[in-house]
Image (cartoon, rainbow, N blue to C red; front, side, top):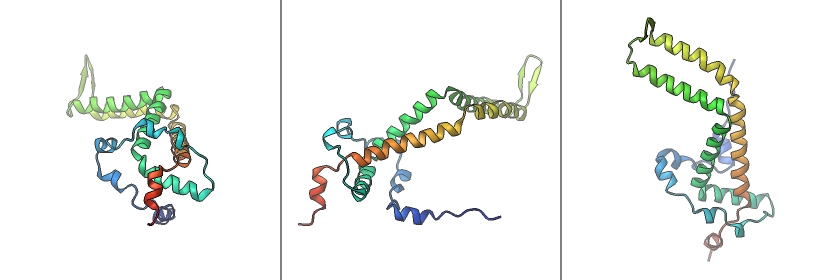
Length: 176
């Protein structure tokens, strides 16, 4: 049975997103957040307006996604933190797996001895797996992930489609 092939190049070229994410992969996180636009510019109420048609929505989204990309990344990070704070069982599972793996690796291959109890690293990894997998499924990670994608999409695309371009960019696009 063959897998489903999705033509990502075709989708990227249709929505004019071919080279949009190249600079994200090449730069560091700190350089990414150096490009944050001021909050007053990001929430400029004077530039909010309803687009006239879908073509105007496309031009606004194309412009604002590149112009406010660092602000949108920060907004997505804040929504992800909010998701983990509101789903505390998922946060506990993530901390449990990271902390458990760190603790087992800290043993450097030696057995864990507590009194008369002795456990090998493979037994400890198995116990961590047996405990964390049911907790992980109880924490509803897919619901949190879908909420995060939906909330980020609505927020970012809503802002990008209603935020008009600055006047300076309109003059720079005209041919003299």
